Length: 148
View 1 (tube, helix red, strand yellow):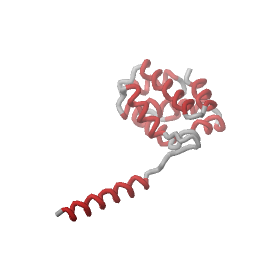
View 2 (cartoon, one colour):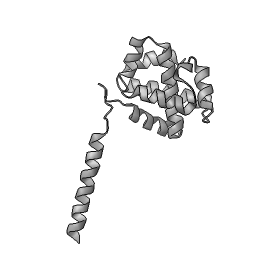
View 3 (cartoon, rainbow, N blue to C red):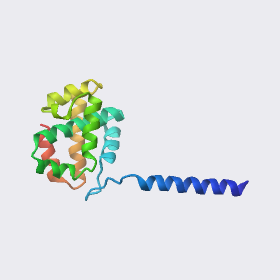
View 4 (cartoon, one colour):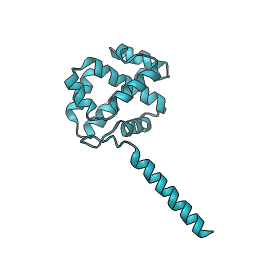
């Protein structure tokens, strides 16, 4: 019986390692990722996973609409998976990413999920700190300029 448990445990660990190794690492040059940012954002703000994703995705959609492609690339290169987060965030908020043209349009979009303007400001602040803390000060500065 002990041998059977050992084999089962070994197989389970092998399956888990294989599954984990197939996940995208999402690592940029600074080691940051959208998944890590969203996880930290959720913990820092107390928002649900959907609220965090919608808020972050909508804010990044605004940044994409406001910044030049080159400037936005410096942010999106810092957080691999950005386009998926924008699409998912806009979908959760029930808007097209192209409709995110101002902070008020973002606030209106995420309000349907119960996110208040104060919480949205906390999300924006967290995202800037996350980028800056990961050594992406220029990306953090660009983002802060858009989200004022």
